[in-house]
Image (spheres, rainbow, N blue to C red):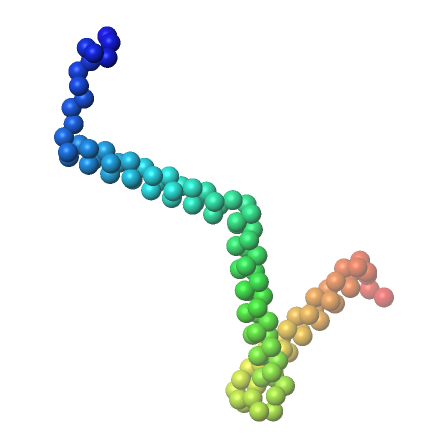
Length: 112
């Protein structure tokens, strides 16, 4: 069959509109897939993890600073001061136990 014998394509304004909407949706979907792909690259995921870790470290530093300020400042709220001193004492105890356990393990658990 040649082009002269082919029937003419039939389309209505509604069909043209629907085809245009379908093309637009395909382009939007392709853009969304590209954006998701870019966001899930290893480099992007690493950058996001680094940013979150930096933010978390900053928050921890701020909280630790506040605890030590409450524990050592004579102007601190008495309740906050008591709580901060208990936290500092607990952390010191845990560190002491970990160091002692490490030393005992290094010695092989032998008694003198």
